[in-house]
Image 1: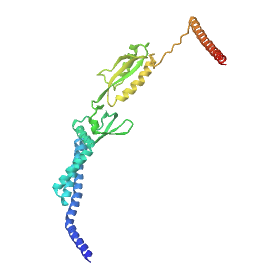
Image 2 (image 1 turned 135 degrees about the horizontal axis):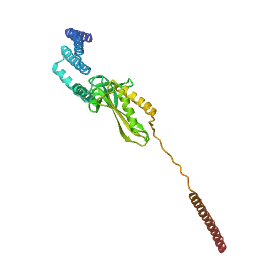
Image 3 (image 1 turned 90 degrees about the horizontal axis):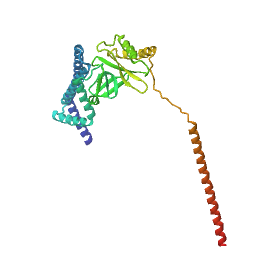
Image 4 (image 1 turned 135 degrees about the vertical axis):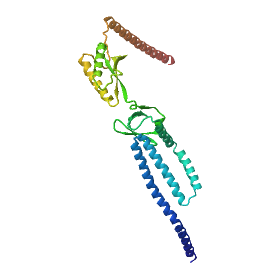
Length: 319
């Protein structure tokens, strides 16, 4: 009966405490649900504001992410406080947890810092074609920690922002135009001036290629198998690859039609016939080698015969 009385006292005590704590719990839950609802509305409003003002999508994603996480952390602190947790203890716990998380996630923090630098310095934006960390592709999205590229083969490349900001970045889009340099080799017996005229006409016929700066054809190298010509022109980013591919194809067709040879790497092998004197010397050398070999063989046989005779004489003397 004593134990039952104790359990009844415990049940009554904790039920009273729960009843006292229930309003705080309900209010904390209401505050959490209402706060998340308000945060979602506020984040949507910020996103619509950036869309109307036509800001950089990278800046938009960064601002939305920072605002979302900041408001949620503030809401979490308010909810915990309403549940009766002291603010001083909560700050101490958050500080200790922040230190531990910071030491464990040093790489992630460097990526976060890299994301902030990308937002501030703007080395590229969404839609630019860049090359970084050995990967080339169009920037799809820049988040706080990673930058996503869509490669030429429609693959998704994810690069950490920390590595991205600590290495070279080549932006092919930012200038709006690009210069091409195509190397075409012609044979040594071909007319260089004729080949240059054909290539210059080929480029001037293409309306997408800039007139200023004017296209050029220069001799860049006297290689082993060919005279290398460099075909250089300027075009917009949108027309660059079409001009590049068309120029290569048409250059081969027109040069061959004009009789200008386009060589390929080759190697000449020469065979020489030995003279009669060389053959006689070769045969004489073989005969001398055979004679020396026979002499050595006869000498070895004589040595063996002498050794056998000496052995027989020694046996007779002993007997």
